[in-house]
Length: 179
Image 1 (cartoon, rainbow, N blue to C red):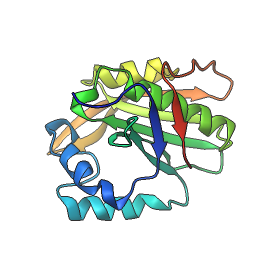
Image 2 (cartoon, rainbow, N blue to C red):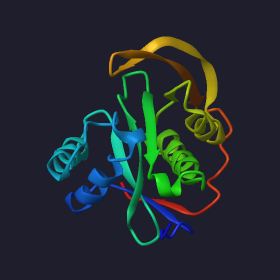
Image 3 (cartoon, one colour):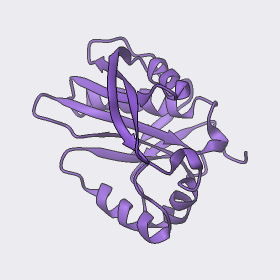
Image 4 (tube, rainbow, N blue to C red):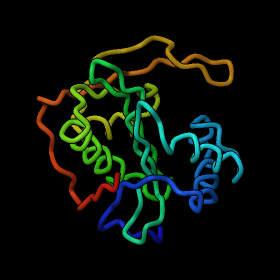
């Protein structure tokens, strides 16, 4: 694996991360995430997420500051509701990285960003994403039939949410956040 997973950091994406970001999107499971196909499209994406009016997108960095994933809350609305999403490199999946990053993001979003409700969704054929959501205290709220379309096929999505009043277990490893 080769990553220092003892401590994680959530930080802004940097142009210097573009090659790692582009490499992450070569994973077949990532190809539908963000339209990143090469360094140029990665640089463009980093620029677009740098200063969102209604959201925050963070690189999940290992203890050596190498990006190993992404966690975000976007589409924040006037009702103090935000849409959360996440991904990790294939090499670190199954090691609690996404769960811990999402727990830290949820705590920050509720406590510091003033969001009351956080939502997320995952395709039904992605039980690992469901486990991340549940592990970060997001409760299942039901099925959205044929919500997503990829390559001419429609996919059902399971919706999850957590409220500021829901109990939140802290991350199992230290996670720092640089906003």
